[in-house]
Image 1: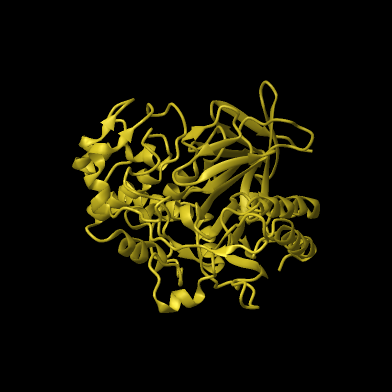
Image 2: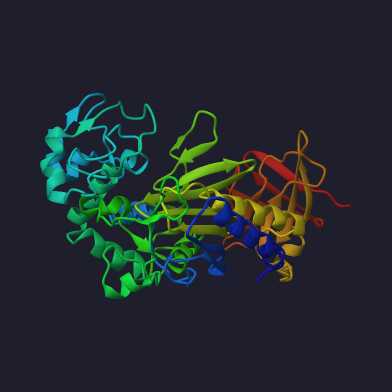
Length: 460
């Protein structure tokens, strides 16, 4: 456990106990992810009010709409295999969708990308049964009800959450992959990532791990056990059961956005994973953005990716910060809770603020020596008419950096990625992304060209 966590865990535990008491919650489970591991777990309250056991790292909860992040990943996987396009109209894959009533916008504008980002204008739910009836429609019933289903607002005119859209994305996955949606997710996401206990359907073993979910009750503290209703035809929108241990593996996977190809536990190419995290739509006040499956939320100068979930008996929040490779997971066994779902974000902010106080960016310092071929390149450079930049060796990487005391540098911060030529580097990040920085060394002074500017090393 790193120093930040050692210092902040007592405060986190106090926050959890206070949340449990103040909001009269039966129990909650918390996980903190650092890089590739679950760095800390805490179980508080009770997994079942009739028993003394607290939630454990392997206790299952219904994680509801967090299921959508798995569905979105499966769609992008299939896109990468050339089996669909994100801008395909839904009707291309589900011809029966042509029967819907289009009150605004167009049928063809209901695309897979807009479904992933809640921008289709499609009704929230199928007109068949649903939440109030505690009976959800089968896929066959959803398809049969398409003539009574409506596109109610124009595409892209507003963010309009739609469980139905994600249920239909599950149908797309089933048709394109030619196997049941649940089988696809198990084979291509759960198994490679060693997500061991996550499941869409409960058997006896899973039931023994499932926390008891509760409904809040008026006029008394003790909640009542929640009813259980399978989501059936919209399983892809929210049927998943998972533990903190499972979700920690899912969060750790989100940090693998380097240029790794899809293989084994890298279930999505790094570039495609980065694409999923890129906001497709930004709120007018820039406070949040909708990505492919994930939400991006701005808190001050930080941006966190997240998704929550709420279903009979269970509330979930998953938050992570990519630059620091840190995440927070929260499971509550009551829904809707009287409060407390913001705890995951509060804990993440607490940890990152403590990191900054420690001078810790979430990773350990890399003390590897500068390669001999790079030593002559380090230093401060300037280009006319007065553009300053440092070239530094930090965390085992050659970087362009903003010099101390300067507010701005045209091409920094960015990374210089080596090529076969030891004096030529591909720029990764900032204005010069993808371009070549080509160095020369004459009379002991280095210089390089980038983006139409000639930078020359200062000898101090």
